[in-house]
Image 1 (cartoon, rainbow, N blue to C red):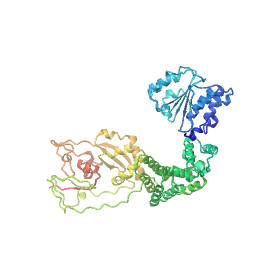
Image 2: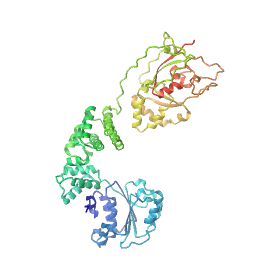
Image 3: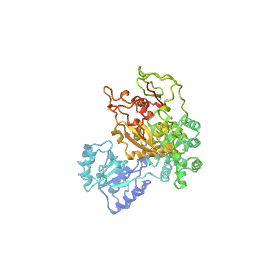
Image 4: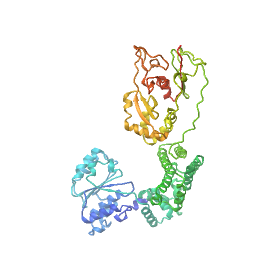
Length: 595
């Protein structure tokens, strides 16, 4: 015959046995003494904190036959014994998770609520996980809950009260259950272990209570599991072995390598923890808790110190001075995200390793260090295919992407031709101090800028900016994004522009402004498609005559006047835009002389 598990055997039978919910038990006891019993109660709170147990205690107390109100429930009368043994017909328990429909509510409650109790004083309905009921089921329950018969009491229990209709909430007395404090949970476990003859160290009890995170049912179930492991004294090492947890020294070593930015040493610690049979997700949670303790000590000192032994607290204090607050915040976010990824990943410790490497590479400013700038080496001059008209010769770098063959009618560029940039416009003027350059923006756009937008939950805004056909600099610090249509440009509102300015400024370290404009569509010559490159005027072409239907695009015009800018005009070419979207970069523009 199977024995009874401890969490059922030690379920509280009196209000005094409930741990950590004094604000609920005291209110209900006073209401019983004064005879102020409500017709509907809502018990909300985390799992394993006593919601369903409190509903059964209330059902006992209101129906107890003891004449002394202060002794109810007495657990001695036949009503209390019947409820404790689960055979009282007037206590109806309904699991809303498996009875969600309106027909279930109509059959179990509405059609039978009018019948008087068979032997008890009150008929008590306990609906567990009530938030799982459908909207139609809630509406079917609403009228009965609003004006129930005098002999009916409803006790609703839920872990997610925000999912319950406001019309239901307003008709119930709500009691919020809290997570059980560590000291109270340890005292309860010690009492159970003493009566059950379980030998266990106090440190192990504290470790069990911390692992349960305020849930009494989890803590008692873990104690029951450890008691079945063997007859020896239960120690912290046995608890870690059963739970698949790693030694706290490994967590401390990983945090030490993180503070020292020792990537190789940290990866070795992770590998050693996994090789010893530790659960990767549990180890990641331990790292998050350890870093949180360091953060609490750094920002609040001993006033908000978490519950831990003196030795661990001393080790945390040694590391607190080696981290920056910003670095700790980012590391905790990265490891927390890694823990969520590990739930649905079969890649072992990959997510944990990536989180550690990224956290170790993060500088004090909270961003990844930029890759070292390597000056681009200009390719030697070579003969270009001939072109049918004078146009800008482009030098586009596209990694591992095959480019389309040039037109056969193009003409070769003579190698002795002078540099076209000097012919097209005067030497560039050095930008003033603090000005933003397009090269700076392009260098960090796909790496650091994308990362900071993602970290601040503005990935959609980055996608909008990244969809721009071109971007350019105006007046030294204004980044202008040119979109293909006015509809897309209108999505970059003033509020989004201010948000983008702040995020880009945090990467560049320079003040900047963001503006979105729409490209004006150029008239299409007869017989040419809008995407045909021949419909786009090139730099160096003669200005169209008065009767010509072709005009330069606004993106190719200078901000100071009407002069053409070959660089901007080249970037606005549809073929070049397609290459840029594939990862290419425009590194040189040459204007061919007239023939």
